Amino acid sequence: MSGGNITNWIFDLDNTLYRGDAQFFSQIDKKMTRFISEFLQLDPIEARIKQKEYLAEYGTSLSGLMAVHGMDPAEFLHYVHDVDLSLLDPCPHLPSAIAALPGRKFIFTNGSRAHAKNVGDHLGVYDQMDGIFAIEDFDYVPKPKRSPYIKFCDRFDIDPSTAIMFEDSTRNLEVPKHMGMQTVWVTPDHDWHQEYEDNSSQPNWIDHVTTDLSAWLNSSGKA
Ligand SMILES: [Mg+2]
Image (cartoon, rainbow, N blue to C red):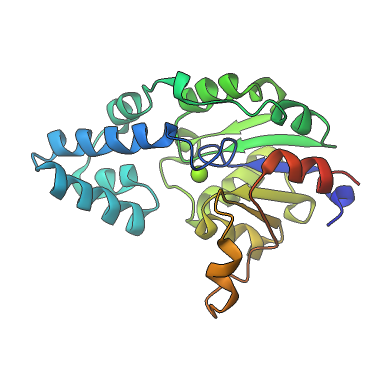
C-alpha cells in the first residue's frame, strides 16, 4: 500500500495504539463486570454474561446498560476508566511513527474523552492528534453502528476516500470500508493468517493486517 493519497489517519485507542496482549485492558474489562454486578445486583458470573451480551448487541456494554436499564453513563465511564497506567508499556517507536505521517491524525474511541487523554498522554501520542472523537461526542451510540462514523466524518470534514482506519476489532472496520476508507486490522495474534486461511468467513472489508502498528506505519504509512 502507498500512503501517498491518505491524508486522514484514524486510530482506535484501546488494544490498537497499544498491544492487545498487554494486561492493561483487562483492568477495564474487570471493572465493567464489577460495576454491572453492583448496578444490576447480579453475581459476577451473571454480570459478566450481561456485559458480553450487551457488547455484542449494542456495540459497547455501556450502550446496552443505557438502552435496557436507562443507566447514566457518567458514573460508569469514570469508574471503569480509572485504571493503573503503570501496567501499560508505551511503544517507544509509536510517537515518531505517527509524527511522520502526512496529514491529520485522530483518535476515534468507544471510550471516554478522559480515557483518551489519559492513555494518549501516557503513550506519547495525544498531543499529535488533530482531533479526538470519544463516546460522549457520538451520544453513546458506538462503533460498529454506522452513525458515529458519519458524525466523525462530518465533524472533521473528512472525505472517506482520503482516510485510513486502524482497529483491533474487525467488526469496527466494516462500516468505514463501505464508506470508502482503507482499513487496517491491528492484532497481536501472529497466527491470524492460520485462523483465516481456510475460513470462508474472512472479513472481506480488511485491507491490511499487522501485528506491529509502529513498524507498519514506518514501512507502509508513507508515500
Ligand atoms: Mg479497540
